[in-house]
Amino acid sequence: MKYRLDKPQINLNLAPMIDVVFLLLIFFITASSLRVSEVETNINLAETGVEKESRDSTIVIAVTEEGKIYVGEKELEINELEGFLKLSLEEHNSEVSVYADREVAFQEVVRVMDIVKKSGVENLSFVLNRKDKD
Image (cartoon, rainbow, N blue to C red; front, side, top):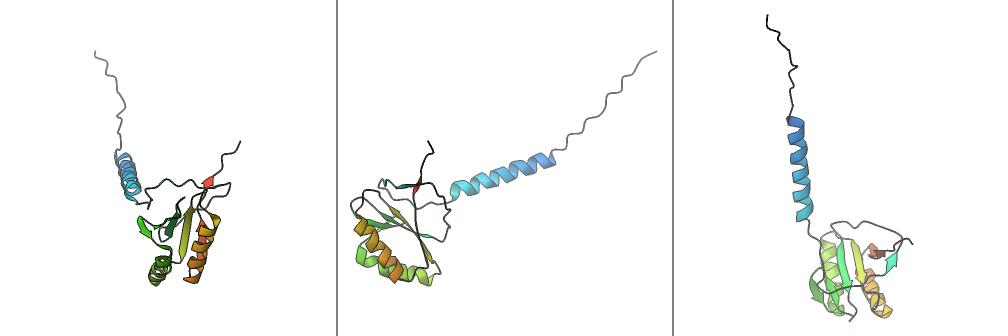
């Protein structure tokens, strides 16, 4: 007489695992293709303990240590900034983020703030580095 051992059948359902893999793939492709406007110069930002996320429709203005003004990757003179912002406001961008080097003269930042407000921007914010907690 032969003894027959009945082994339970194991069914491995791969569909949920494949779904998760595809979702991860889509997430990483999307996250890696998001474009962040950066200036080629090194800007040392001031530090703060408060955080705020910026939106994609935000106009990014960078003021370097030398006082140069960049909007995205394009360098603008101070007198060209107001016209550029007014054109951008026609496209419904009403938020501006300012990256100002900590070594830039405060008067340069104030001039940029004045121009931003004169052009009709509703929301002006400053981008800072988060302070490490000691």
